[in-house]
Image (tube, rainbow, N blue to C red; front, side, top):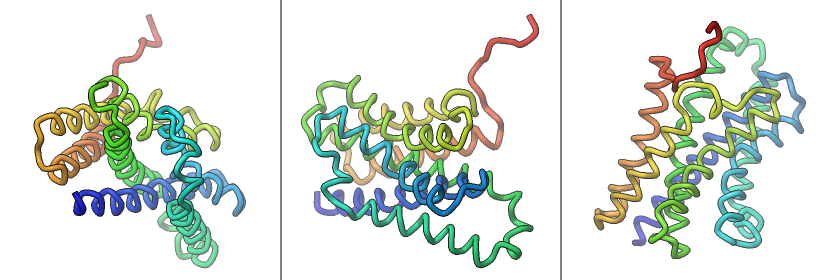
Amino acid sequence: MVWTDLLLFILQDIGTIAFALSGAMAAIQRELDVLGIVILGVITALGGGVVRDILLGITPPLMFADYHFLAVALVTSLLVYTLESLSSKYLDKYRHSYLPLINIADAVGLGVFTVVGVNTAFLYGYGSNWFLVIFVGTTTGVTGGMLRDVLSGQVPMVLHKQIYALASITGAVIYYLLYQTKLEATIALYISVLTIIIIRILAIYFNWNLPKVPRNR
């Protein structure tokens, strides 16, 4: 259990960095100032966790009780701003790579926070309520990206882009089922996180989308 707790802590750090990175880069792409970059980075990184805690009745939300992840998000956002400011001319030729980098960081954050959300629901005794567990996991995973997109003036990816929420739901279901089989928690974590990341990246690469209403009918 100690190793599982350590792995979850490391995964949350990775997810926080990934989502803060995607939020800060999206802010730079929209030409926001340093405060906008920091706000977007922090909200993207921590927004899903706040909503998760509210759903589970955890008050105050953990980000206000433990400042570690807030600090990680702040430092990441400021580092992105600093690197962009100091190396803007050098980075100009790489600006076409911003969207792919945002997508990769977002996929990592989506995978990590979906599984963290499911695990938090388990820890607080909701393991028998499969719908709540999967809903909390998915909400934890997608909320940060939704807030990032809304605040940067875009339609959230979860509503129209390549398979997004479905990847999160799939990973949450897999983790829930593996948990019920009593599989080693560390293995279940790896499988579920990697499943979400792989589905999301494949969806971007192959442009997989859910059906939409045809424009010309």
